[in-house]
Image 1 (cartoon, helix red, strand yellow):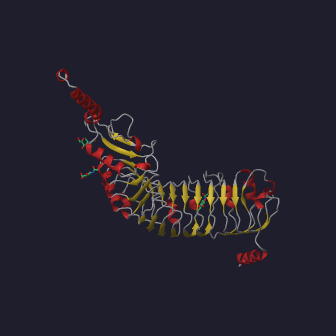
Image 2 (spheres, protein in one colour):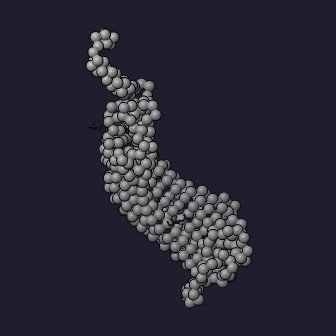
Image 3 (cartoon, protein in one colour):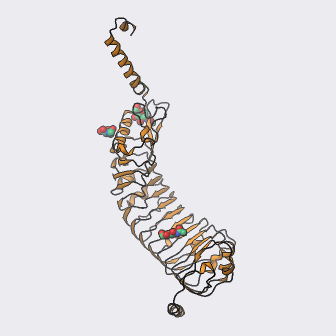
Length: 417
Ligand SMILES: *[C@@H]1O[C@H](CO)[C@@H](O)[C@H](O)[C@H]1NC(C)=O
Ligand SMILES: *[C@@H]1O[C@H](CO)[C@@H](O)[C@H](O)[C@H]1NC(C)=O
Ligand SMILES: *[C@@H]1O[C@H](CO)[C@@H](O)[C@H](O)[C@H]1NC(C)=O
């Protein structure tokens, strides 16, 4: 270099400084670069298939600066995690976990070249089109989370090859077709979340998924009877479908904390097993065709039940007395059923000390109110309207009109028959 500058002309100086400038730009990536070349190319392809105008300056993707190495660069490539192994000088991309910045575009096929990927999470953006088939080459994936985008197409059978998957979350997209029955071969699954899509067909037997804790299939077009489900479930939500038959297959799910079967066409009895699951806290069986609910006494046993919503069924007979034995119950909704008879005195006691809301409107309840209803000082949410009650106007929970006499006598006669 020194010899060169000795017989320097101004032009060679210029070339030199240009050369040095270039060197300073390219050196960090060519010398320090440690990421596998094809991983870098895949990241480049991923960002290329996203509309640049949807990448805001504060987003993770705006930090993807390909003049630096994705794995070794200082503070760039937010949302990318890499493996660093001592015996391997080459780093691999192991996780893509993007922010929800409204990225608008397609998920590039090139994602399938990131063969060390364990996490692909791109929730709440504007990705559209089908999930690329190449995703199902990513045999090391443990988490596939594409929730809240505009993905279309079916759930490919290919997904059943990803045996290490623990979490599948494809919720809030426009995915159609059936749930592949062989999904039950994914024995590591703990979370299967497919709610808010256009899925149809029957729910396949999932009892082989012995580690599954969360199953959310709500807001789809699923029909047919409940399949076998794994007893490991802690959350089950299958609301807003067209499921039919009994819910007795749920009696085995003793680990449940939350159960939502609302807005289906289930019928028969809500068995006492369900209300007495040891950890259950929320039960929503509203808007089905159940005709009875079995409420057994739980005195002497700890119940965690806080919320019971059974609105909009065909529940008949007297209000269940034993509800008063559920010590942690706060929210009760038995609105729009066919309950008759009077409101049990014990309901008054519970409203005084523990219950926070009681919705009983639109039934055939009759008679006078328990006296506690009239002297409750704290705020109670609820309603007793549209029954056959003698309801004093000064009691807030009594606001609204009662049924006309004609409906009430008919109902009472039917009840007696
Ligand atoms: C992905 O890998 C395939 C096969 O090795 C190759 O043909 C393709 O160019 C790669 N794509 C990218 C974007 O690197
Ligand atoms: C080690 O490096 C090679 C390329 O040199 C790459 O193909 C391989 O996947 C790397 N292994 C790990 C565990 O990163
Ligand atoms: C129960 O489900 C219905 C319908 O899906 C919903 O409107 C209601 O808010 C739910 N109840 C509770 C307590 O979450």
